[in-house]
Amino acid sequence: MQVPLLLNEYDIHRNPVAGAHDPGMMWDPVSQKYWSYCTDAYGPILGVQDVIGIPVRSSDDLVTWQYHGTALSQEAVLQGQDNGPQFQKTRAFWAPFVEYAGGEYRMYYAATRAFGSSESRIWLAVASQPQGPFENRGVVADTWGTDDTYPNAIDPHILRDGDRVYLVYGSFFGGIFLKELDPATGLPLNGKPKDLGTCISHKSDPVLIDGPEGPAATFVPETGYYYLFQSYGWLGDTYDIRVGRSTSPAGPYLDRRGRDLRGESLGEKLAGSYQFRAKSPAVGNTDAGWSWGGIRGPGHGVPFFDPQRNAWFFVHHMRDGSRVNRKRERDGRLSFRRFYMAVRPMYFVDGWPVLSPEPFGGQDLAPQQPKTGDWELIHFDYLDGNQRRSEVQHLTANDPLFQRCVVHMAPDLENGGSCLCLTGLDQEDQAVWGKLLAK
Image 1 (cartoon, one colour):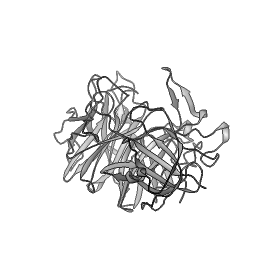
Image 2 (cartoon, rainbow, N blue to C red):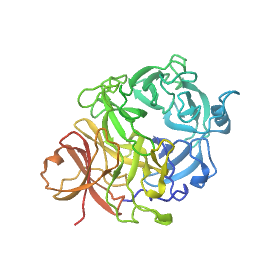
Image 3 (cartoon, helix red, strand yellow):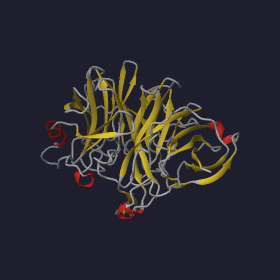
Image 4 (cartoon, rainbow, N blue to C red):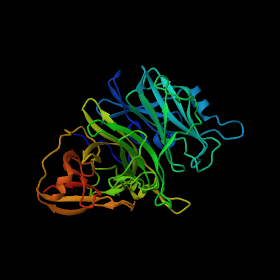
């Protein structure tokens, strides 16, 4: 079992999961490897020269990663950047999703006019090998020329339902949308990139929290439900991970109480900013005054089924909460500048997904028996996006809390070694994470 990352190490060659924002995940049956693609980062902070073109990483075990540079061809980059003579070029591409389909690798990625703009396009690029080069085939969703009441054509994800293929996309403005694609080409089934599709999630009125954004949807045969994952909150600090479920790919997606994600509910909260206790420097490199400050803003993730382990995972980014990474934005909000990819085991309780408190380190994923002892517990409030800190509670092996939780072994990111964890629901139907303290 391995601790999967070291915080405050931001050279992408020494710590390949550094700088991975909005990561996706794919198991490739051809190369027999895991491949992850993410939003473009900027060379100076990562120690690399590649700036634009979708960073790509591979792994043999979902724990140790290798950085391969960028995946788009130079021609595809120039085409995706081009917004016409009256507009500046797109500076970076966002939130790619890649799958192996029809004997080729298909990458869906977003090119937006500017950060915070709702004028964007989602491109489909294809390649004959997972590391590229990917060449553009065409635009699948286009919100250029629309106002903020329309969806934003970013954050693509693919939902497969038998022989039918859907693009799930959108961010913040008009909500999350679903539109059908041609299985043979991966382009819009009706040939119209400007056709927006169907809304499956949107913010409430009045607005409670920023969002939704970063959607991903999948079908889970074991439960018989389609799940829509999304994020709410401020990207730099209070971001979170939420989910709703449906019996149909087009929705309605509901929470536990039957409330619709289209304005009635934000979805069931699975994770938010958190802080377990840590023995520095097990979790991070203490150079430049770094000290443990927990994790901020986990979010924009995708569910991922691993056929090698016959198990579900959830991959997302998360931010290092150390004080040395804090920055005050112009509007007064805090941002934590450094981010990393995390791959968490995903279990199911009462037909709903729950995420492990600790990133995956190669451990046996089988559930374990509860144990009596002192447990660090973190409860995630539905609306409060502030960092949740652990509290210690003595639990007996037959405590009612364990009845709606999965107990499992995991690497101890905060302290090194391994630990017994729990994930599930507390008596108030809130997500709860826990770690058994060593005696």
